[in-house]
Image 1 (cartoon, helix red, strand yellow):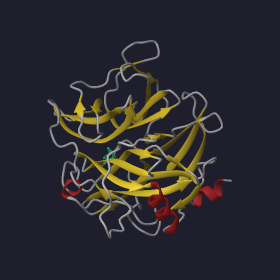
Image 2: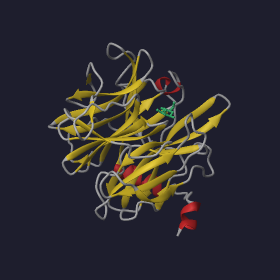
Image 3: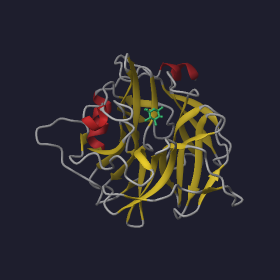
Image 4: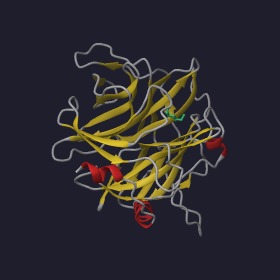
Length: 333
Ligand code: BMA
């Protein structure tokens, strides 16, 4: 997450290019059938750990059930994926595995790593677990009501409270959805819900629904949020990536939000796969010293891909292309 990480994956932007983010030339970094019994790995999260990298991967079995698996890497590009799913226990130490699990985010707060994912509790909702060593994973029980997805924890407490972005959904492919913020002192009881961002805007790419992506990145002027926006076409949904900046102390306030997407499916590995036309960001590696950002995203529900940018480029883009679509927030207070 947000550390000085000199060895994060990196490629320079092509000379003369004005792209906001640019794809790794060797994408995708995880291809089909990467491990025995696993057909596809996509929407996944990585984090630095003990001098190298660890990841929590969304793996889809050959019987087509999503679950979470650990992976290890020295360079955050080439990954060795575990042969078995992550095993969770409850706070008493009893086995407590989800029936399915997808779209993980991975966040370090103080000395504890948190995994947030979409779990099953009478329908999809947000699951939460913690680990200090990536060996024992303690699952916190039923943090959220169904139906909810895209739980994204902030990487630090604000005013002594944990903050979670989420997107209320339905039991299926949810044709609606805004981003909300909830607070908790103990990760068990959540409240003080606030509306953050509406779907929509003048452009159509985020007209159907939006959802948080990687954990927000702390920058001088606020929190940089990379998120996904979805449009509906006659051939199904198209998932793109957008950027916004949230207020540092009151992150339910949107300071800037770019009206244009920063990435949309264009490459074959994004437009063709199990679900065509999906780019779905779940994590970032940031090197504050050089300003470099490596964004990990799922492509076409089939691959893991990486794209690069810098904090300056993303910030400038959000400010220059600002279009606030936050009408409800103004009504709230
Ligand atoms: C969403 C989630 C994501 C997936 C996307 C596109 O509802 O299920 O995991 O990438 O749909 O299929």
